[in-house]
Amino acid sequence: RIALDDFGTGFSSMQSLVELPFDQLKIPKEIVQEAIHSEKKRAMIETIIQLGKRLDMTIVAEGIELEEEAALLERLGCHTLQGYLFHRPLQPRQLEHFLTIYREG
Image (cartoon, rainbow, N blue to C red; front, side, top):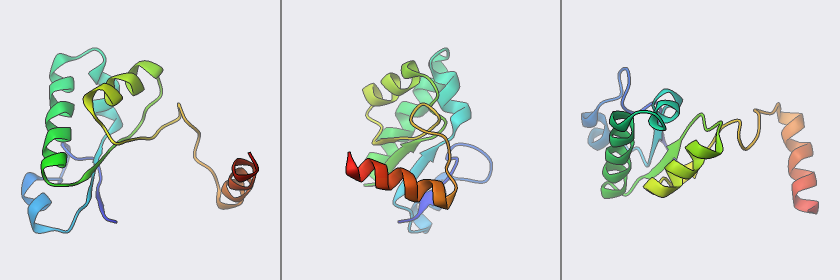
């Protein structure tokens, strides 16, 4: 799987979506975190999600820290949410431990 990170900012462009073999679009946390207060940012996210779905891509929203952000992204149809709301980043050994506990239930 190949993700286009921070779509909508910097050097990520619409043209790269069709020229390169991306299968995921990642919405940057700056856009996500402003969307609960900004109609324009919500419109950007809706457009990115619609575009990604039309191109048969998985949409990932980064930087989710608030339940309100998660609820908005779910309502807009985002496939995957990631951020501190769910868990802090882990070192490899911490991840192994976390997965062991998670599997055990």
